Image (cartoon, rainbow, N blue to C red; front, side, top):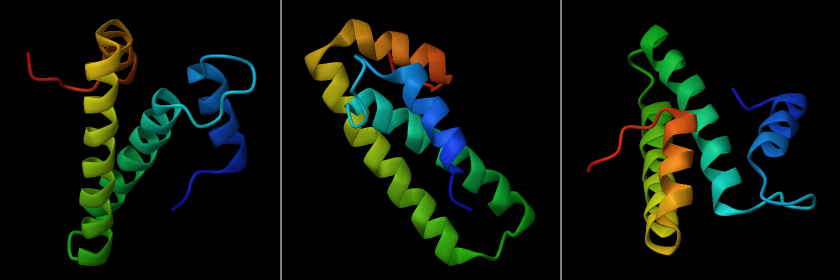
Length: 91
């Protein structure tokens, strides 16, 4: 299930870096995390939904690449984002 427009706007507003920011890496990670959480709950209820499982794994991979980018370019923002989203990070 996709995010509702209102939920998406709320996430964008809370993670954006400036007023017109809708696509920064931080916003993308926050949106992906929300979708990953929803899909994880779906897969707990529907364990045989292998197509959704593949989509989940692809989203996790995309989020990991974005997090690596943020960690490389701005370690402070990376730590703050990981704490806000409750993402486990290797130390």
